[in-house]
Image 1 (cartoon, each protein chain N blue to C red):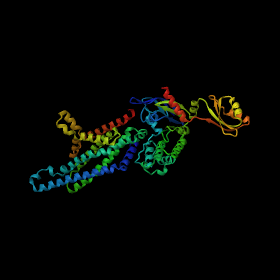
Image 2: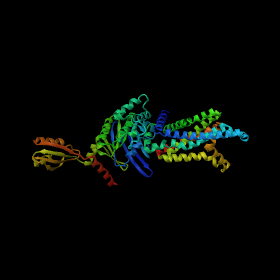
Image 3: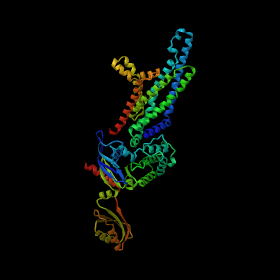
Length: 315
Length: 258
């Protein structure tokens, strides 16, 4: 759906982005992750035809963003970071204007506006002027204007910034509901958000892509091997010894014990080995009680910091 | 064409909501009415004196209501326009730049020229309403005297054309900057230069002088106010407007490659 090849954008002598390439499949939700100033907004502005790249190609739905800019623009919905809306217009008039200009026909417009207002939960403020709305409502009006022409591609620049927790949950839910029907690219620097909504993540730093993968794969890759925490009721020595010889286990560490013969262990697995089934079988066969088995996952924060710092030391 | 209309409608709405349109039109009418009163009062004083003074009565020009009321009134209105028009046009593009709404507007499937024309026509309509509302002055005049309607109509045509050129120039100034004050200052200064260009004709050489007097706003309007509708004058104003709109388009476009 979206293909980006060797995209570079220079502002004067400063580089905005440098040789970025990626692809997004239809129906996918892609997270764009990076510290402030990494080039997220620049990439999005190129994809939305706000300005062309210095070099490289970008195609949306098969159309080049420079050659067939109008065709691309018909197929995207864009929510810029600071949500610039015409504040001197009432919500409903604003949405009608945007809808018409994005090609919704005159006889469908009323229905369409009602639909997006319901989807974004802004029907109750439809008559209010945008300048009188709170930040959360404005954000939703921004989302509504992006959605009004049923775009194939949605490009959202930090859609949850500046909202209260309740509103963040609402907006995330809304974006999740859109996935599948539409291709979504969203940028953020809030990491849990990415693991919650996105199927794939691109991490960029200083204008260059440093990782592209699913949130899970990223976690696994960075960790090198999987770690599992086990809590078992049974004799500590014997448990540790028997589990240590299960195939795929590289090491086992005894951790705390909480009395009553209940002990916690930290098991390291070899790379790419799923040892959970064998561990469980061994415990059950020996008639111990398996109280808890939990993979120790590295949070996206850890991955992110690690990648970005690795990147820095590499240069 | 549809997009031009949509932008036009949106722009017109914000003129009245903001409420720039009401303020600018009201002030224009107050000033226009004040000038009309003074010109007409001095004309009636002169006519009254002429009844006592046979020498004065022979001065045909002074006693002609078209010559001594209608024509100066159009001249005065053009000067008020010079002051008021930049306020009508200064926000057209610079406000969009400042508030960032241009980012959304330029990513909608609209051509740049459609945006520019929509905004241009919205300002032209506000302006037309503004000068149309001065019409009661002439009705009053025709009740009290016998002005020539041909001259009044050609004067309005001249004002309309000149206003169109003013608006195009203001729109262009507004596309240069995101600061409305700068846009207003540039368009006021620029328009004043073009308005007063004729002053330096006498000192410039014959060739340059000819060019200067042609690109000056005043002589062209003067023809219309005399009742002369010359295609050269019409073409001048329309060309001026078209050239400014063309520059505006290029400025907007440059945002894409700069």
